[in-house]
Image (cartoon, rainbow over all chains, first blue to last red; front, side, top):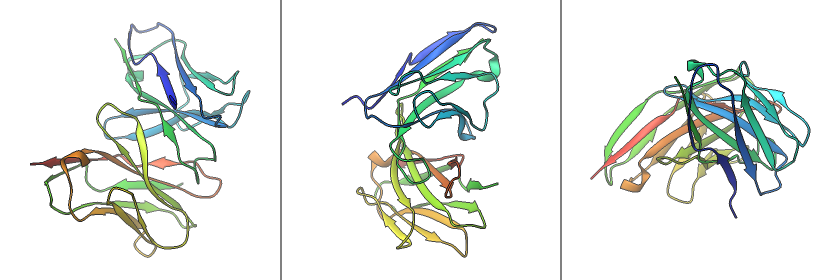
Length: 114
Length: 112
């Protein structure tokens, strides 16, 4: 049982380049989330989805787009990467809404924008 | 808006010593509280949670946290830590219908 899988795990981009992070979960969870983790700032929610075909903005959505075309996948896109987007990105999923249920996290994707 | 503050960014302790990781939150309504743990190079895992009922909650590996409404705190404690407890610990708070807000994290370093 793989749980939550993120690809790629590491990526280096130049300013202005685009890329997509893929998150896949095999637990049939309705809810999926993308967070970024920066030193001293904890985790901040970028975007989330409450089901297939739905997306919503989180705390820090600017510069990112997401899609949830299939229930098991949640994609995070950067159209024009900026150095401020250098971070570790975590995908998570949950069966219940995050305010009562447990979030299951992937191992993270470390992105460096030069 | 809700917020959560973890009062210590780093906590170094010796093996078998007790430890307390402090967490305070700001909210005037009923809250749900969580502690997540992140081991090196891994994602976060739920350690324990308080939704309602008994104010003292425990994890399977010996940690416990007490919900203190009057002090708006949810401190995490363990009476005797192991090397394997070395990790970063995140406190998180939300309420019914709200989004989960994470604290800044506390790095627990257990030394032999």
